[in-house]
Length: 200
Ligand code: VGL
Ligand code: ZN
Image (tube, rainbow, N blue to C red):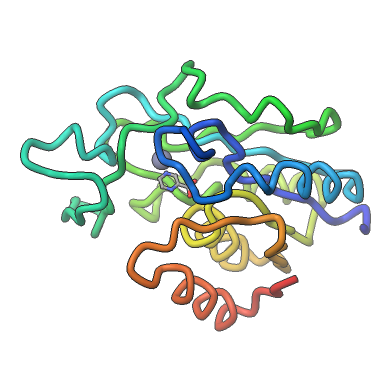
């Protein structure tokens, strides 16, 4: 890959593996695929979903709500999730077999108690930046490649926001797995295609 390319490895954490807090079906299958893919990149950024206990995206934080219910938040509709990736827990740790020692930055997201952040670039209020676009720009990186979990949530939102920030974007499908709630996977691919994102 070009020196101007960066691979963003999204949320390859225990919490999204079978047996984790928010299991993504066959999420563990991406680990060896991503280890091999990352070898082709001089530049790699990892992300970690990193919620305080009692986070607003957890169904358990709202009386009478169940996981996968939809709730109106001040910033828009929010899917409510089972508790997952609480800061400092094993659920939030990166998968033990993820082996990318040359990764240069870990972006943690979703740490504001009242706002979710699927995207590695912008929180769900669509105005709070994580700082990632400025970091990539400062390093002269122009081409963003995305892989990880989950295709239809954190991968898709990260890819779409990378386009909005002006990067060329490719999503590596074989290195992703989806949650697929009510057609969310097909919808995400349509949105990504319409945004000019390459599906590799
Ligand atoms: C994710 C739902 C909630 C993801 C994170 O990594 O796709 N999905 N938090
Ligand atoms: Zn989360």
